[in-house]
Length: 182
Length: 227
Image (cartoon, rainbow over all chains, first blue to last red; front, top):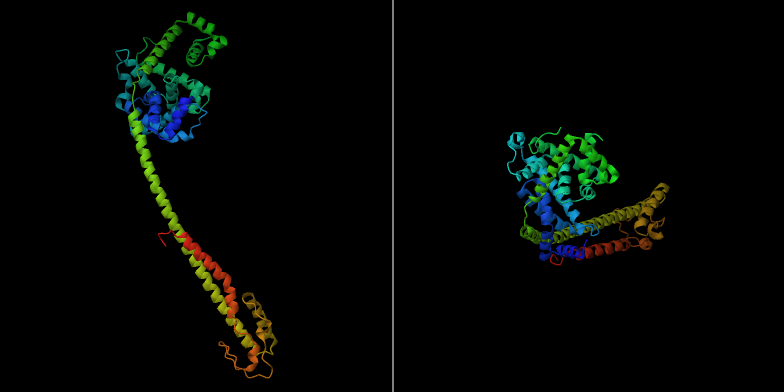
């Protein structure tokens, strides 16, 4: 961890508003990207990111200063997203249109495929979704993802492999690829 | 290398450089050259990569600084207030528990005083009664043995002088004694020691000290405003 980050953390622990602001500005986009892609919903992601920062500020005294700050924050974010997804699954029933997703038309514009991919990501198992998002959105290595998710590196590779395979299969069914190569 | 191996190895290269590093690249390339299905499949994977890139790039930027910091500072303020309330509550709770402890100590001390004084009184009665019995039946050996055993018990409470059970002279066969009140009226009784009140008081002296200490503790434990 750099000197600046150490000072920043100390300032946050003292409750200095300037340090808190700087800390939030430094990590908010990375955390929001992770939460947004894991939850697939902007408002939910904003709520979870705010919760992540509040938890982080309250727990900064527990943070091991020998370890990098970023993965520690991602660990909190992943846990918060898991909780939010669990609560959501308890709260909501699957919508009709998501049940009959195969009847939907493929997106006409190229940008629409990203949204289609998000629908595919939303269908992934939670572990696949988490490591897929950490790998592609946060560009973390398999080793770092393993540390955050508390599993071996080999497991992360397997999950990434399966996530990618399932997404390709989903997009193929949605007509993203011109023809089925078999 | 068959198609399945080729596809597995190609996907793995996306997040693990090992297949390339371990010399698999020529085999992968060779299979792609000769298999049309796998070429199409490879194109799909490249397209998927582009889709993922778009997916990552479409994440909107946010600025949550104001709401995060304001919420945190507000929570800290509330927590600080509740902490001071908790401290007051804990102090009050401590004072209450001290008061309870003091009351308990006082009750125990009072009970102890009462019990000891009661026991001393009863023992004194037994002692006095034994004297009367001895005086009445001084010739009886069994009675003497009972009296001596009672005297042993009494000795533990109040050290009894050897003369305490002084017998009346043989000549004085008419007892001027009233059992229970123990009134000595004859001249011969001058050798019998005075009643044991002094001894009892002496025995109670340590207890009195303890009671004093208990009450001084109670006073020290009570908060000033309570006093």
